[in-house]
Structure formats: C-alpha cells, structure tokens
Length: 561
Image (cartoon, rainbow, N blue to C red; front, side, top):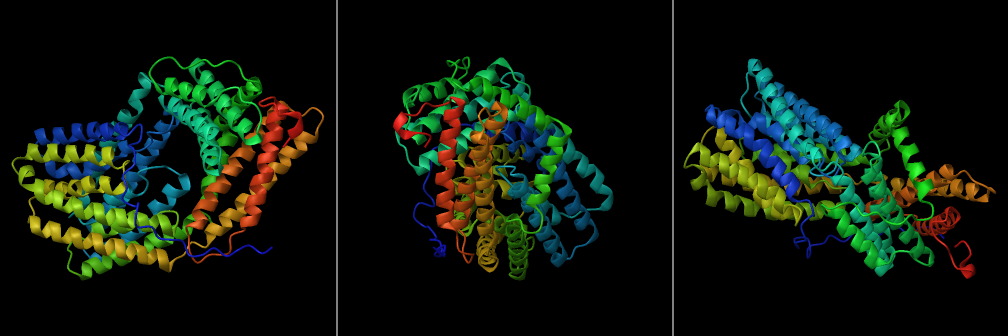
C-alpha cells in the first residue's frame, strides 16, 4: 500500500500558554547565571564602569549552558560555548566598528543568526540553544564601536566567560555524579510509568530516558563505585522496559523502580540494587564503549557526525535558511518602520524557529504574549531601576534569575522576565526615553514573530521526511545485525549488547524523526506503514535479544516474541 500523504498539521492555540511543572533542576541555571553575572556587574559598579556590562554579559550568559551534562563533558561544552560566544561578539563588534549602515548590520546579524542556529542544532547543545548567541551578537551590532576598543571588550567577554566556566564546573567538587544520578532517576521513573501504564507513549518515553541515562554515564568519565551502581540501576530500568514490552515477568515493579529513583535523585548514597541477569555483560559493554569514545577514533567519529549534520541534505539546513530569511526580513521591515536599532526583531525571529511548523507556531505565540507582558513589566519597574546604578544592577540580577526560574514552566513566562532584562541592559550605556524603548520593543516583537513565521511557511523543511526514511533504514540495519548475532550458537556477549543498544537508539531516533516530520507541512508522504512495521519488528528483536542475554525470561508460550 502506498504511504498516506500527511495532512496539514494543526496549529494549536489552546494549551500553548498552559503552565507545566517546573523542571527538577530549574534553580541550577538560574543561580549560575546570577553568580556568573553578579560578580562582574558589581565589580564594574565599584569601578564606575557599568557602560561595559554588555561585554561581560556576553561571557556571563555562557553559564546557562550544559547543566544536564556530566561534568566531564560539561567542561568541554561550556568552553566551546564561550569561544563561540566571543567569536560571534567579535564579528559583530568588527562590523559595528567599520560601518554604520543599518542594511549591512542587519545582513550580518541575519547571517550570524543562521550560522549559530545551524551549529547549535547540529551539535544538539540543548537549551537555551542559539537564542542567547543571537541576542548577544545582534545587540552588539548596534553599539557604537571604535576598532581600538575591540580587543579590550573581547577580553572582558573572555574573562567573564572563564568565570562562567568555573561556575558551571564548580559543583563537581562536591557532587561529581549529580548529572548522572538525575539521568538515572529519570530512566527509573520513566520505566516505572511504563510498567504502570503500558502504551506507545510511555514506552517511547522510557526508551528515550534509558538511552539518555546510558549516554550520560558514557560521557561521565572513569567508572567510580557510584557510577557502577548507577549502571546497574539503568540495567534494571532496561530490564523492566523489555519485560513489559514482551509480556514477561518483572523483577522490579513500578513501586520499586520509583523508590530507587527517589533515592538516586536524593543526596544520600546511591541505591545498590541486586545484580540483574546480564549485568556483567552490560557493564563490560559500557566500559568498552566508554574507552572507544575516549580514543582518537571515537573523537574523529564525533567530528564526522557533526559534519554530516551540517552537510548538504541535512534536515538542519532548511531551518538555517528559515533563520537567515526570517531574521533579515524582520530586521529590514522593523528598520523601515522607524526602529533605530532593530536587533530585537532579529532575536524574536530567531527564537521562533523550532524543528517543525507546529512547534514554531507555538513558540511564536508564546514569544509574542510573553514579550508584550514583559514590556508592561518594564514600564512598571523602570522608575525603580533609575533610582541609582546599584538599583539597576540589582534589577538586572533579579530578572536574570526570574527568567531561568520561570522558563521551564512555559516559554512565555520566561519571556516576561527576559524582556525587561534586555531593556534594562540598555540603561547601562545611558538613559533612554522609556516610551521610545517600549514602543520600539513592542513593534519589534510583532514584526519579528510575524516575519519569522512567514519564513517558516515560505521555506518548508521537506527533508524532515528524508530523516524518517534514513531512521527506518538505520533501524532495519541495526535489527538485521542483531538477528545475525542471535542466529549464532554462541554470540559474543559484547557484540550482542552493542547490537541491542544500537537498535534501541535507532528506535528512539525513528520516533523522534517521526514526531518532527508529522508537525511539518508541504513535504513528501510519510511511510507510516514502513515505520510501524520497522518498530514492531525491532521490538520483537529487542525482546529476543534481551531474553538471550538473560535480561528477561519469557513464558514458553510467548517464545522469543
């Protein structure tokens, strides 16, 4: 049967602004950015040089990144963030120093936004993604600059970035396994939810959480006693997932898994679960894979994956083209309507772009609503912020904290704090008429969101369907590899474990690719029957592999299904 062409995705309105429960670690980026920005701001205040805050802020905002990563990977990720932030700032300052043409400044801002979007998506850097980079580089384009000032301003950004690196890496001194513990707890909770309520949605959530836990443990560095216990807990989560999927008996029920999750997330000792069948092979496989990631070949493969993500044919590139066109249009239209420094129109447009049309639409609604409310908040607080320079510094720190504390509840709620924060930063370089700031910002918000969405419709991501086809092929290839090993009388334990883990990763990627493609418009027909067949066959193979490894025991009537 021919694949059914997907209908146009529904663009949600109700529920877009609904609040969620806060993320379990919402306070970590919030406190980190306050510490990382508070120290430079107060130092500049003591030196009576608050006009330099914009440059230190570029480095301070790097403290928002990497909080879900193990410290061994976080130190490298945040370092790359700092270097990328300073590189974007350097390009903006150099442009501002050598031209005052608004048309050129907007063009450079749009190109920088597209490049930043491309690399953030390709590297899957995680929240807050490219928007912070674009905010810094776009704002710097419209700041008067002399060529001789650039090295000093970049040095300030680097110094603040180095301090941000210390802030994000510092907690490793007293809780070095914290990120891995949280990832393992999420896997246990997701497995418990699937065991309590089996279904496609909870199964995919559990598989993704288990995959995320393994990735966290792989990136964590050398195995410590706590990490080895965490690995055994993930084995139990994986065992429960396989048992429920195959209809076999379970060693650990939802209650036991949830109890382990709560104790793992806490500050006490990591639970030490009883050994599960297959544990030795699992941990041997983890150690071998961890060693492979550390060697030169593993690093070369990681670089090749990044290059493939930004190569022609990648689904990342249409989103980058959207960013380029939308940001340029937003900047030029805003400037044409009389906004003197239309950088916020570029930032608003850049913030709209999500993996597909449905998510971009929701983000645009959230951004407009949150920013417009934020403009009103700015109007209310600006009299207090202008009492003294110290009051201005304290207001900026408050909104820094509020933005990160609220954004996990819903993006619009965080935007309510981001808008007055961005407007108050302008006050460091001199007082501006409040009504002019408010009116320009409101106009930029509407123009940026409208033209950002227009670019989403004008540049459909037809490669999203291609990503699904590639995911199906990769899943089938991983399944065939596992089936060949199962056909051997005595398959190598490490090879079988590697094959099973790759098949699980393929299923997670297939479901993610399908979710992205189903929210896109004007694309090729989605091979829905092929997706369903690939998923069903893969789950049967996973169950058979888990049974062969001793992870689960199936009733005789079920065979290896």
